[in-house]
Length: 418
Ligand SMILES: *Cc1c(COP(=O)(O)O)cnc(C)c1O
Image (tube, rainbow, N blue to C red; front, side, top):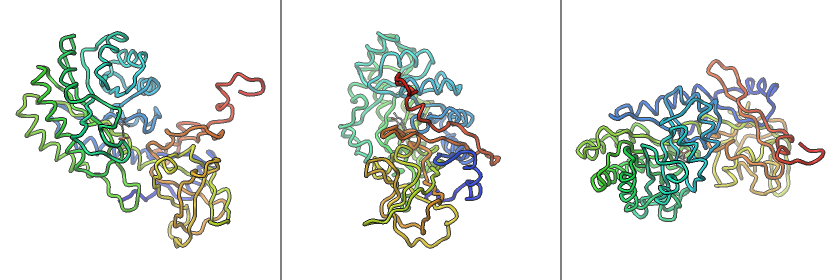
């Protein structure tokens, strides 16, 4: 089921907006902690240890990273600023997975400095990494299963995807790295995004477990870490069902017993890089209705825009909307819920059935805790909103202030601006 229950009431939000005006994203700390704990607990059977490395791109805020670190998670980074965020939040060394692609040299250098586990995206990056940052003691490689694995709507067909090594390249890479002094090895794949089919993740583990055994034998190396990637979806649409994490874990445990234990790789560390499923359902974009407009349709204009939440415009993604204080009112009106960007796709919902909306109403857009604020942009001079943290004791902490016009002009050196 969708997470439609709000952790706050209209009265609470009216109080919050006195101090922090709309729009803002607000994250439910208690729910994030509970979810993170349950996720890790589901994999406590892994003999070599399990850790989810939270994909920083989903919610790149150090306050959130700190909370997740307290719950036993590391980070998955793919850029220099993400590495810096991770470092600032006290997450370093092998608590960081650096899964980047088309990587600049200085990012490899920083990842080496932090002692992160570098996950190579291409066989040519062996020479590139060696030249610019030197080869570390441990390296992971990213496998692209190509035709072995069916596609996914967001990432597409693996053969068309720009990521990872072919099967032959994985085995060659281990041999080359071994000859150059690398001693510890990891294997990674990530072929889905926002995938809701639980079996998909068990199949991915089967593919990786098989390849790890084969590659370890053929290249004569010890693979100590298997990274199943991220991509676990969340139920955005009313009819969606969440991925059954305990079921996925049990499926992977069975495969571990049949594939890893007899292969000589036991005990292997199993890790994941989930972002969306960790924080996605526990973030909310709160906005106020600014205008209501009747033409060929009825439009409700918010004080938020696609600069604050791009997913509906970018993917046609569905995000549930609650009108605060009207939770039990009849859903007997149809609206396009829009932002103010000069792009007609700046709509949070099209032909959405909602209770009757009036100017001044507070609306909550659900499931914005991952790839929400993070995807924000400044096109059309739109400014990114604040991020708030709803603490377990009910207090609210500002964890990122809203942008001002001055921020927007910060990179210009021009009289009268900045
Ligand atoms: C985006 C990404 C993730 C996280 O994806 P979610 O859908 O947020 O779980 C993990 N690993 C890599 C390499 C990614 O690019």
